Length: 196
Image 1 (cartoon, rainbow, N blue to C red):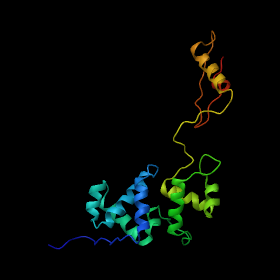
Image 2 (tube, helix red, strand yellow; image 1 turned 30 degrees about the vertical axis):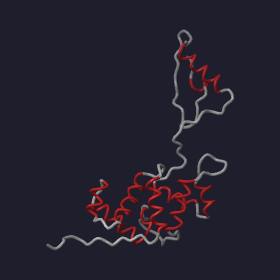
Image 3 (cartoon, rainbow, N blue to C red; image 1 turned 180 degrees about the vertical axis):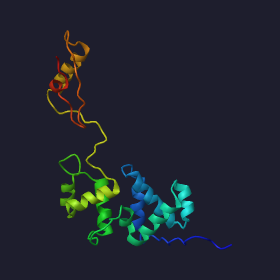
Image 4 (cartoon, rainbow, N blue to C red; image 1 turned 45 degrees about the horizontal axis):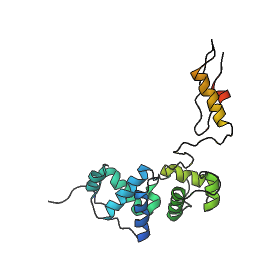
């Protein structure tokens, strides 16, 4: 019986660098899940699996697998990002995009705690807007810290003691309010509580 439907696009990884990059992104814990899934799709397609088989194995749809397969064949690794909707031709090649994503995930700047679009642009020689577009396309947010950071304020312990004291033993006929702190910024005791 003849097969029905559109024929799948043949996908062959051009060199070991492509395979190593894709496998590295799949293994890395800091890779956004959408990007890791796209890499898994391409690796499975490179093994010769059909779109339907890849979709079933990875919990995707055959249509999505076919789309990522075709985009990879046409644009290589750069095709796995969100494609521009309109405008002029691309000036950034796939290798530059791959290097930018890898540097974002695997390195940190010397002084600041995280990469900014400006600092990454200086390091890579790309424009700030290009760095921003690539980060958005791949779901990268290096400015978001996943860990709690303790304040470096020398009076931090005293401020915490004062604030906790207000909650545990408030003054008579007083109302104590708490204001939520901003992400990664400790609220000061004087700003945290107010008595009426």
